[in-house]
Image: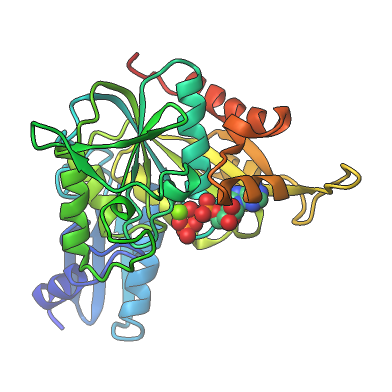
Length: 346
Ligand SMILES: Nc1ncnc2c1ncn2[C@@H]1O[C@H](COP(=O)(O)OP(=O)(O)OP(=O)(O)O)[C@@H](O)[C@H]1O
Ligand SMILES: [Mg+2]
């Protein structure tokens, strides 16, 4: 293989967990082959992503060269080519701040955290909207008891968002014939639907737009980061998966695309027995703190595994609005920490 072929092959490798290639992300600075030895220089911005990319390259070319030297080019600032993420479009100029709630894995409580954080912000007097960006598993309407509503249009041909618990709500689940109609859209169609929800919905002026993202680090996440100046990302995890690659990958993606991470929410951290009130640390203690330390991002708070949170959420009775004082406080504390971590425009 000559240098040119090596560069082309490198550019075709997909970044782990993303839909884009190393070439599309502009991560390859140079590639040289001499005497069957490969020398590759990478342009990654963080040490973590350097290690990820190095690993995937080594795996890809196993034993094809007598030696592989993969270095990180000493260039801290570079023109990233994650689309236009470094200077994103702004499809939501009516929102002063945009918070993306994400997770590496599904089912960790992202939607529950998004809805309760949005309501906690509204309880502080802010104007808040929540966009359900999880087009394939939209459940914000159920969590907010708006699942029986269907979209209506105003005289300006704009979609009127649903409203409950003091927040405005938009979700594809409000547009389908029934809440549980499955969507079989290609991701490009899903992305266009979301862009329409940003542009054609009568959100009014918002202090905060909270986005409940789908799990992972795919197309929708990257498109949202390209089309919106995300003020901060909140990463939800559970103690079992705290140390897994999925969480690290999500953190690295946001670091690489330069979206500030407000912090980590550890959900289902410990169990409070409903009968005795005793606390059980089923998964051990301190997982969320460890990962927060590892990536130097704050731990915004912990929410225990609490049957009342699941039951209330299933009935569209958000714990931060209708739960007991403890349940309200978990989410209000998370919002307080987030407000003190990030310099929001208010
Ligand atoms: N702290 C908690 N205590 C008890 N149950 C919880 C807690 N947080 C979330 N749940 C429950 O866990 C389930 C998954 O939560 P949720 O739907 O918020 O996760 P998600 O990350 O948005 O999932 P998905 O990836 O499918 O969108 C729900 O049934 C929810 O009620
Ligand atoms: Mg969800």
